[in-house]
Image (cartoon, rainbow, N blue to C red; front, side, top):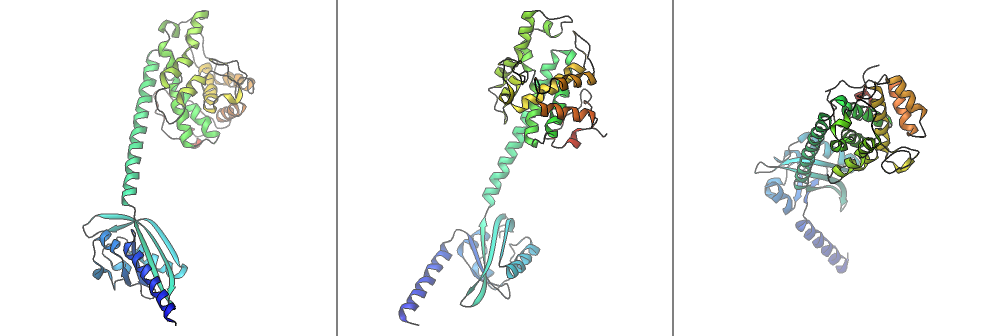
Length: 352
């Protein structure tokens, strides 16, 4: 070998040594045949609190820091046979007793014709802790939203005893329809929240109009119809994860443009609003109101079926009809709790 070649090799080895020493990930080099540690860089010493002298000559699963010795042995066997292994969120216990959660990547390669195993260990503890804090905050936020929605729903229905349970029943049916349409759990939760709040604008409607036992006068009808826009104005500044205010504003829009408050048509209407429109109509028609008796489920279903494609979304109508006629859906009893994040019809529907 020429002097120049030896100098190049020495320079390359020196470069690798500097990278090895300066790396901000832990690095262990293992003997391929025995699994014993032959090299350890300064970062792994600082990460685990064990000096290099206590690491060298030990098998990976003999290090006191390795909490899961079975996983360590499995990793060693896997990298010997497959040449590569990767674990995430692997717990290592440092000398001070604190647990470090690391990403563990190991691969084998030849050095001067001799196989070695290199283990790269990245400390993920801070990232995982941050993700856990974010998850806890999100859970607290969801709980707060649930309590807010339930409180507002109680307030809405406290002004109109004739429709007690209406929001619960509409929400339950709307969720079942959304599930039947294959919507995601998160989207179904958005439907639930919007349905529970769809009549919040009625807070501004005089009580005597809400409970009037006779036909409304034109100006009274206009006041009542304003509740969709009023609901939007109440909710639009609340930062929900879904377009709740807009869904509430659109729940009386109709596919042919005959609805209110803006006369939207077809796909201009949010899907969630189209679902609530059907659920609201079926529930309202099938139950008694101050100004008229309920017509019952059979006639209510016949009405939306007859107006499918004109006033109501055909896919939503079909899902609703299937629920009642084929899956024997029943409205929940008043006061029954609606669970959050229901994704499957089997979780919503009573047994056939």
